[in-house]
Image 1 (cartoon, rainbow, N blue to C red):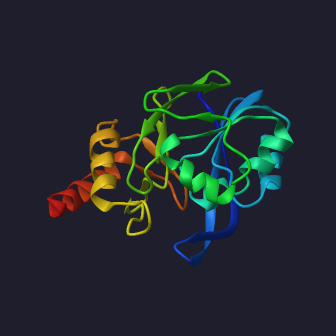
Image 2 (cartoon, one colour):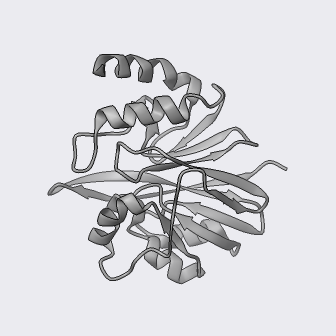
Length: 209
């Protein structure tokens, strides 16, 4: 059975390096009609709870520690009784938003997460942030890319704890080997595919060399 994937979109503020930006975030709910993994928890937990619709939440998985991807995580965890997972390399970002509430568990490259018969493999893809991760559903040909890869290219760099060369190498080495028709569900904006982004990433990486 194919994964059930639902998208919830919330709006709010992304704050970094003393600047604020208005953003819309994609929250992805992955599983079946009984249980679900939540990929990112942005801005307002209430529409996410509505999207979950009473299903059991196995975990709230944070693709990275920027505030606009984690600022509803604690309220959501309290509402649905689920653990929050963050890559340890983004602990310093998590603590800016949640200084008195550590995450419940960590993410690691190759780790397997599951809900409703769906298996997701954690792919560590640093660059946008040190602990940035994607989640790959091999059976359904889907990757949840957080802010690592967008429709139009790599996630933003040039801010604290980010690096353009690192994100390009992460995408080239970890994501581009996936099948070209793999659907990329992004942290912001529209879907894309690995094949649609490959040439642009390789060209940008060549410019960095």
